[in-house]
Image (tube, rainbow, N blue to C red; front, top):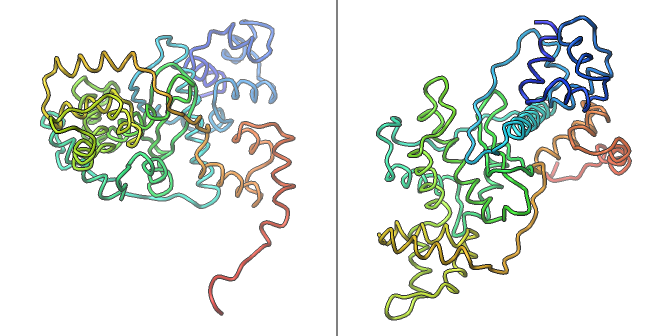
Length: 367
């Protein structure tokens, strides 16, 4: 396959028209893109580099012998606009590929086994299986009393799952491909930290059950039942039943009643939304659907003064591997700047600040 065909594939994958691509690349118009895609004109290196940037493709994509099949991306809630969705997907895949390249360059590829569900048949997978998997995951991950506090770090540092944050319309995406397991979360200001915690646990379910629900080619849209199972898993993982019952006993009165104020305290302690807590209580205490629905409508109008920290775009391990690759001469300054989404001048500062870092050694074992 020639470069022209690959340019067309890359453009269509991100959803740009020829006119839009030309504008973003600083070319004269749609005819210029058409000439490149039809191989009437060979692109200059600077043009190809710019097009690779706006298409979120590596330069290798245009020169390698074979093009890998596109990974399945599972959206929990995707942008309504198809172009916006394709742009987010393209950037997410590019980030995953960059992370994988850093792992290869620094010899940090790791093979790990995530917890596996006992039920292997998607048609037989029930809520009890989701709860059982949540309990098994919490135990193997050693998440403690407040799972949300350690879940993300355990996934990134112990199981090497690639977790990125980007601002977009929607909630979250998960995928498994040659680059490993990956999750994209929404960093928009409107998406609060406790919402991202739930989205992370929800997407983790999809990764753990990937081989259960993704057995057929084209299984790229989760069913309503699979989404309900993912929600049940997320709720059970973030709010373990025994701990939740202890909290309810602690805050409820003699009549078994508890105020919204106290419920909000419990939601804050587990770092989940008040709505997520009410849904969890619905299943733990077998409440009537109409009653739970009524309470959820009430809390939708409650504005609580909880602080929500803005997440960084990159995982800490990704940044650490990029810096190591730069220091060891395995990543150029230009590549480092691109991978870290910073200017070339800022990238130079990393080398200046790290002078002598590679030569410093400390004694940890007696000779």
